[in-house]
Image (cartoon, rainbow, N blue to C red; front, side, top):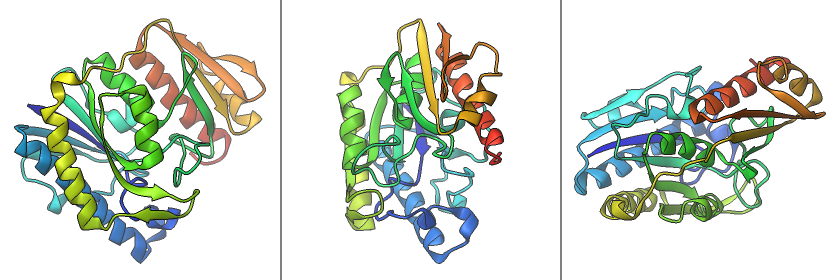
Length: 278
């Protein structure tokens, strides 16, 4: 059995501040939570291995996407590092995988009681929808996995993140490692307790794989992005096939979800350029 792991950081146990997850700050906090993030990924792989998985590909999916401590990862796992990947948080995913894990995930921008909530780039993306469905990163990424016939099996993070994902994908095993108290505080499990729960959850997710199914968006697929600023919409609207529908809103339509996903990546990259944050 072959498992893909998309590893984010904001949903890691104990995380409640941007300082804890921002590699550019070089704070003691970041190095502590870098280690805890890595340990949660290792726990997910250990649980999956216990349930029969034998191949793993990990995609470091947070920020600069160079966070995981390579020398602490299982020797039988491969890792994708680095930013500017065409498929970002789900780069390298294809039909050869039996399932996908989302570790350390967080809520969509605007969610209540979802610590550090955002959708890819908070300075650019104010809201994102697929066929009218409000999207978190989990939604957007799950739809690409669904295109390849790969079901989401496990999500770890805060309660809001898990419960929102399970509303869209009821078969997913969710591991709640913390309760969010607004945007900048949490009531968290200890790192060890969180890792134990993730290990058990991953094993359970594989034991329940027969109940899982791919999360598929039916064509035509309509992506709507509400940008944070008008000037960002000005620039995104320059991308072919994007339609300007409101001062800060653009729309992209295609029958092919990988094309939609790449359009989303291009849009938040272009929005960052317009905002001077490329």
